[in-house]
Amino acid sequence: MYLLIDKATRQAAAVDPVEPDKVIAAAKEENVRLTTVFTTHHHWDHAGGNKDLISKIDGLQVYAGNDEIDGITVKVGHNFSMKFGSLTVKCLYTPCHTSDHMCYFVKDGDTSIIFSGDTLFLSACGKFFEGTPGQMYEALIGVLSKLPPETKVYCGHEYSLGNLIYAHFADPENPHVVSKLKWAKQQREKSLPTIPSTIGEELQYNPFMRVDEPSIQRRCGTSNGIETMAFLRNEKDNFKA
Ligand SMILES: [Zn+2]
Image: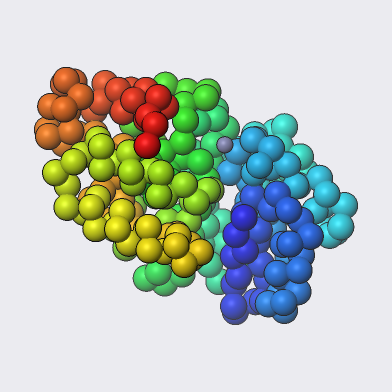
């Protein structure tokens, strides 16, 4: 869950507010008015709090890419753009983990962030529950890798340490993986988050963002990015650290 605050208008949007009481408490603490929900996808640990939140706060706008999301008021599609106070929010459709998956790209002047849900994680991607390797290739390489490199990535889960252990196995010679893994271990030992990263960083150490790299393809015995995406996902699904 994340709380996005527009300082100019003191309004807030909750991204995947699965625990509504915590979100309401956070909004109160920040002294902001919760007006909006951005839902990334239909899985219960992302959309499962919508019903309860709507029952507690009147007039919420709920954005999602799927008509069946609880409380949806606006169905959005790829490149749908809106103003949220002084911020601009652009919806990026990235089906594969689920067929309704939406990422939200937020811009404030020169600063940008992406709420990437379960499509892009720090050093990995989500499982392919409702899609194909070709769709994840399009989501990661066609869409998300094209965002400005300084874009901060706020993903749906803190899976970073396990993901980096796998990345080290998948891309053993990569020094960016080694240093990020070391740093992530230190963060977790101190019970600190590893999130956010940036798109530029992900392009350096996330094997799923690097499927077009010849060195990665060589290890996988593949000859293109989509085959490599399929190979890595299958390998990681069966990987024991
Ligand atoms: Zn999910």
